[in-house]
Image 1 (tube, helix red, strand yellow):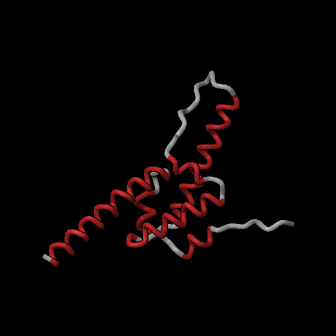
Image 2 (cartoon, rainbow, N blue to C red):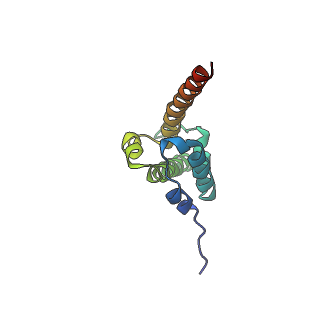
Length: 119
């Protein structure tokens, strides 16, 4: 029997807390790439197919949504509990946008405070 290589343990050891967002996100991308689900981070969400769509289009959409859900679960499972609670109703794309907004504001504020002290 062939063993399956799983890098998810990387995320167990490096859970997201606010100061380690960049390192955490890099690890999430590595895990999702290994799991063949990193494409969901591209942000190209397909439109839901109409009732008249082909079975292939419906299946492609279903597979994408399943991969999006799995990627979201990987992210949520690798966060500190307080961050999980804040983001449990979001998908992977909304989570990343929210974190970038949160942590970029924080880094801008920190840079401003450091500059203020220097001058």
